[in-house]
Image (cartoon, one colour):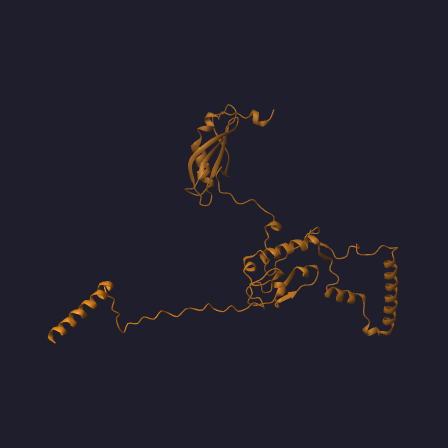
Length: 310
């Protein structure tokens, strides 16, 4: 029989009435004035009850003080079991813990910070895995073997001619090769290249608003510096100090207003302001038709007057 079936659903009467005992225990643990009203109680088993009190501590919204009391069989004295602060149904909780490797974001590293990579990092692969070596019985393998023997013979002759004081050791050659980047233990895998290309395309690609409004793409810009490797077919480095992508890896389909061949657009010509003549006033007749018909009548009356006097 499980513990859930043996637990009594009805709270013990004496334990349920021990509210003052539970409050006193909570106030001894908490700061003064932090324990609030009695919220509820829960039966934890036979003669075991937990009392919940409201928590007024700043920053613990929805939390409750839980005080568990109990009494022995056939005993009338209730004793204290434990006091603890527990989150309620609507409590304000901290976000779920996430490992540091998943919390890290670009730009979080500072001076002195170390970011170790895992041994099975999908972005990396061994620098030399033997996959590029030709089959042992192929013509290429035999030719390579012959060339290797000739190189070893020539190296032996040169070593004999070099004085002992200036002889080159294998460690010095390895150090020089490592300095030139020819002895990397791991290199970028295809997955690492792809996620890097997707990240650069999202930041400085053809779909950005800057590229949509650009007069031309970066593939025709003189400020584009080519890259080495397989990514040179799709990306380059911007060398324009006035561009928002200066020093960044940009897609060949990206573009901005700082394109080297961008034409200077002429300004739109503005019409001259209107001229108002305020020296003299223009007369505008109220009734132009009536005034025009009255002129001949006045002229005829003057002519008749001249005939009468003559």
